[in-house]
Every structure is written in structure tokens, then in C-alpha cells.
Image (spheres, rainbow, N blue to C red):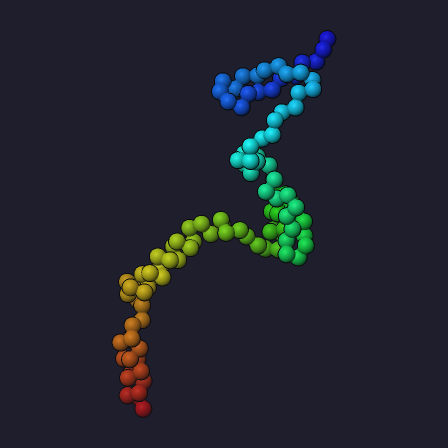
Length: 111
């Protein structure tokens, strides 16, 4: 009994179709490559020459060297910006010129 080979269609209705033994699929689009494999890591090396050409190698290098990526700080920077703006506008105890002048005057009057 001959072995049959099937592939699933990429578009709806996503059913299976029989193909010949010598069938080779066409090239995949570049849009799904980043989602499903490590193509974006191909040939990637760190500045010190370490091979990080896969997600697992990259993750291990980051862990060993106590490093992180920018996405770990997603909400941190926005919160810090709000705190800085509140400080600058005087909402949370910012120091004004008048405060500095009063402090200098107070220190000078103690002499």
C-alpha cells in the first residue's frame, strides 16, 4: 500500500489536500517568520562575540550576564515620567527658587 501525503491549506477552509511524494511547498512569507521561528536570530552575536543565534541562547546569555531587554520596563518609564512631571509642576513637593532663597537666608541669619 502506497504512503499518502497530505498538507493543510493556509487559507479557509483549512482542509487537507493530498499531494505527490515529490511536492515541495512554496516559500513562506516573511511576515510569519518572526512569529514562528528564530530567523531574526540568525547569525546574531553579542559585542563580545558570543553566539546568540536562537531564542534559548539569547535568553541564557541574558540570564548569565544579569541583563534584560527593554520590554521588561514597559510601564516603568511611563510612571517615572508622570512622577517627574508632577515634581516639576509643584504637585509633589518640588523645590522652587523661593525655597532655595529662604533656605540661604535662614542659614545666613544664623551667623
